[in-house]
Every structure is written in C-alpha cells, then in structure tokens.
Length: 199
Image 1: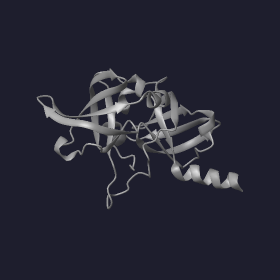
Image 2: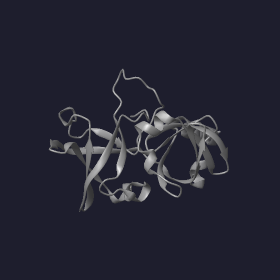
Image 3: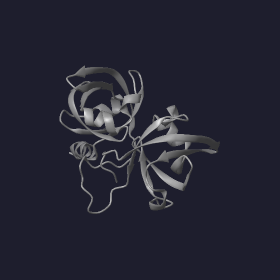
C-alpha cells in the first residue's frame, strides 16, 4: 500500500528485454535499506525490486515489468533518462498524508490541457469511459503515483489543480499535453460503486 506522496524522483538508467523488461532505476534511496522483493511505486505502478546496489553514479534498483503491465500502463514511454515518481511502500505507523493507493494502475488518462492559474497549474484529463464513473468532484485519484484532488468532472473529463510544491517534488514538469499518465481510481469509490450495483 502507498499514500500517493512522492518521496523521490528516480531516473531510468537502463532497459533490457529479457522476456520481461528489466529496468534499472537510479534513486536517492539507500540501496542497503531496500529489501529484495520490496514494492516500490514507480509512476504509480507497484513494482517488485529484483536487485539493488550502488555505483559511481549513485544508488539504483532493478524491477521486471511484464507485457501485461506495459499494456495497461504508460510505462512504455520510459526510456533512458526518463524521470520517474517514486514512493516506498507504507509502513505501519507512517503518516497517511495522501489517500490509500494500491499501486495497481486501473488505466491510462490523457492530458488534454495545462493552464497556469496563479502559481498553480490546472490540468484537464480524459479518462477511459469505464473508469470515469469512479471519479467525483473533491474525490481523490492517483496520477503518475501522485495523490491529487479532483476539482471538476464533466463526462469522462476531469480537472485537477497542481500547487507549486507538487510541481517541484515530482516529475510532472516533464509531461505535456497529449501525454498518457497512469490512473488509479480511489479504492473507496470502487467499493461504493460495487455496493450500489449490488443494490
């Protein structure tokens, strides 16, 4: 489990096809404190650490990404040098500063516009039709692993406001209109919708 509060910006150092895609992510996390098999959310995708270490360029960890994960997420846009939002798994007793995030991406949303609004940025997204019903004004979504509050919803489009702090401590500044982003809907919204269907 995660909170959607980004704690490091990693950088893709290498990609290698080995059946699955092996990816090396550079990080400021201390590799000695990362267990093999640990979960790290990378742009919102819960990935399993299969190796870790340090070299002259700094700390790193490796993950394997399956074809299934590539087909359901925006990870296919990663290349060497891509900056990535990172979050370590939640520990008992940690502050829950965002919202409960599983790291299981539900689909991909598209950035339709980015508009300055004061010091903040207003983003407009288009979500897959099947996921739009789970997105509500003042509700939460995780986009690229970042816990964000929904401002408005119209059909399958929704807007969020990104404050300067979030812009500074994430890799959102690398994204542009037309880019695909990983979308995880709020777990509570999913259960409420299921209960409503059950009647």
